[in-house]
Length: 407
Image 1 (cartoon, rainbow, N blue to C red):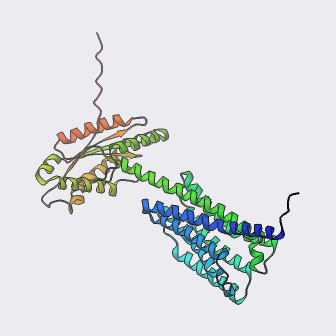
Image 2 (image 1 turned 90 degrees about the vertical axis):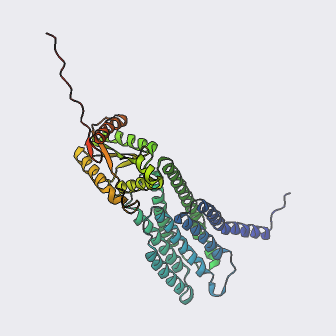
Image 3 (image 1 turned 180 degrees about the horizontal axis):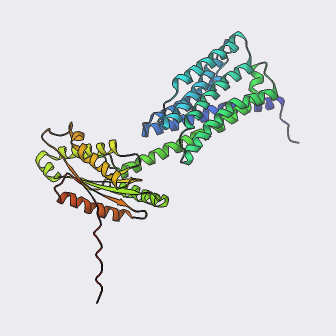
């Protein structure tokens, strides 16, 4: 007959299972901390470093909570729960920082300090395990709610934006609602032996592991999306002017034209050309020419309306697509670009040099393609050059002559 296991074997199995559960969250935390640290080495964004710090903090916190030998008066619980609060703060900083929003460090620090003070009271002055659970859970939950509040006004156009928002909301609900529900039905704990063998702590271990994994995957996807966006911007951008290059401009402009056609919105196109640019390069050197191009790009970015698609489509030639703008709005912008160019270049080029630009513009009708608009605006630019340069001309279609009728 097979030999049945002894009580000692059963107890050993229980201890082994408890040890596995105790090491689950530290292992997850250390693995993700290492992953985010490696990502930070490739992408030196502060929010990625915050994510690495958050997972390192949670690993240390769980190790203090479950693995470190007990100290007098259970003092090991204090650094453990400070670590849980630090995890919440760093994770909040990672998500909020990813969107370039102000990180509420002061508010989070006040919440963490109050939670720590109340926790210490219920640890040393009036020992109560349930009170300590409520204190830390509520503090961490309030910090998670700060993330929800920060992300609430943001337009969540992409799936990852919605996912990060709901991860923060889920984390807040997990921290605030879970202890209330479970402790209400399961009662309190007389000591930490009962606490660590309770349904509550088992639920904490596994729910926290699931939330940690979901949050890590979401943030990693966000980092990957941001990296791809940067690569796309580098491929479609002109580093000298800070505008799109020709490929980037044509792709963005074509998409915007389709949108304007669908919405029956007007659109205008400007083509600007720096006057006598070859002569400037030959006389003053290419460094001065580059400075003028950089100044022109900065000038356009500073005064162009929101939504303008601007690109450097040639050596000294630029194009601007203005969605929603009619011919008069386009003319006003063109004049502002032309008249402000010299001031924009003032600190970058010799004082004796006065760069100018000629600009052609065309107002498009719904359904006009980019190639047609570029052709018509280029014709208007040619008229501006022929009229003496340093001026703005709007495209005027040639009049249609009546066809002579046969007698």
